Image (cartoon, rainbow, N blue to C red; front, top):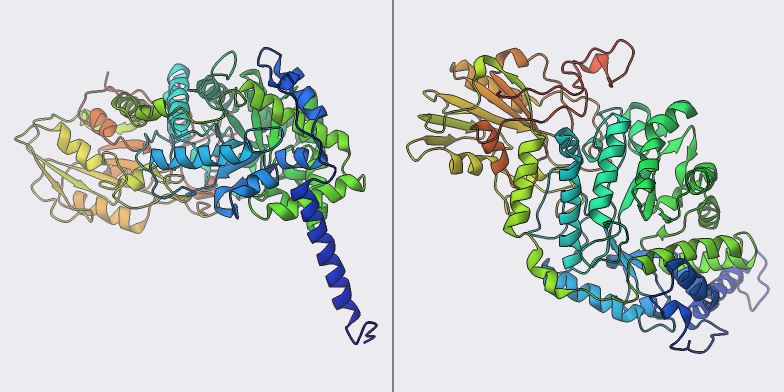
Length: 620
């Protein structure tokens, strides 16, 4: 090997040159060479009386390239090396990914953290506030003690748009109370195959219902006609597009349908979201006919921004841009040129900023593309009132998990339950019934009934999540003379008047939730069988993120309720079981008969489900 400099190998010299170049680029970003002076106090962008578009244009005209690039970077708080980097790199956005919370996980900790980050942002020359995002997908679900609502699959079963809007409004209030101003919700996927582990995040398999529910939720989160309301937050419709339509329900898989079907089923809900005023849209991990959506300019720019007239900004999903090519540089170029405005990095932000700057300087990413992205982000920040009110409003702290919100969540549970079988009108039960036997792994675990995206990314089986378990709700409802016995495994049922078996799935989220076979577990089947073997009537309550295969067992059940993932207020299930509420939920998904006749969706040729879309019994 040739050693040109004092015996050092050539590749070592090249590596040193590359490292020095990167360090110089990093220093330039931090110091912003050619740094202009301070802006005057009467700069137009500082005037709230001027329209947001004009303020954004003025601010953009005063920004250096480094200041612009910082607005396009979104960093998870866990990967922020030091708070001062918000100032040094002009970072425009932060987020808390699944389970990313300050310690201790209290409202006060969130407020202090948010305000501290915001102080760093306001130390910059232009004093552009950060926008902070979080996956508050069924309430402020990363905050310990927040109100946890049913997941979207349950809300779709309510068919009540005013109620869904109210849930969005409460979620926004509890998020805003901790200082945060943006949720990555609602998910307006249209799941076509329940093997997909995110099925429960979709309101329905039927695109028009998804569009209607999504628009209602967006209005609840953002308000109308403007978002300059400290009790509202920015919504984010996700994931554009086709996440629910991948082949065989594979998460991050490929959608293989025709363009006509792709648009009709998977893109159409975004039209309703845009009409509802959604300010941000997140790109999906999936591909469409072999092309990853994160790099699909036709749909991100031509269709979404052009044809559909979306004026907000597009954000990538978690590291979603990093799968477009073998080289990181190519990934960044393809993603930004395709139309992504903000990149959820969520770590290694120095690398992203250095790379994007180099791409702009070589002309591989046009300055016009950068300006368009940054202007879109700034317009949203102005419309939200962040420049006038960058810090948290601590007077909102008492709003978190207040009784009124808990009661709304309880009502959401009642409205979302779908009664699928009621042999001999065994339901509703008499509150004065003599002996009730409760069994099943999901009967006394609030974590199970909340599902994924609760405290952590994949959810938790811990029993210390604040809320009311289904077992506790039953105990709260029956008369003082009624004896309630609980055994999770179904032992000791003999002699009881009725058995309530609460079975179904453990918590899960994306990736981990994908499942080839949706049959009930052997454990669940055995629990129910032990009750039937003692000739005790059995009411099955299924806690799950999707319909499951129950055909071979249904004949032995006296009643069957789909409870979905009801959230923290299990009392709502007892309200239905004992007749305080007449079940009104209707299936927003077709219920399949078997895995060999799967998937099944409303409108299919030879449509033959176990229970059809829209099915649901009542007591009256």
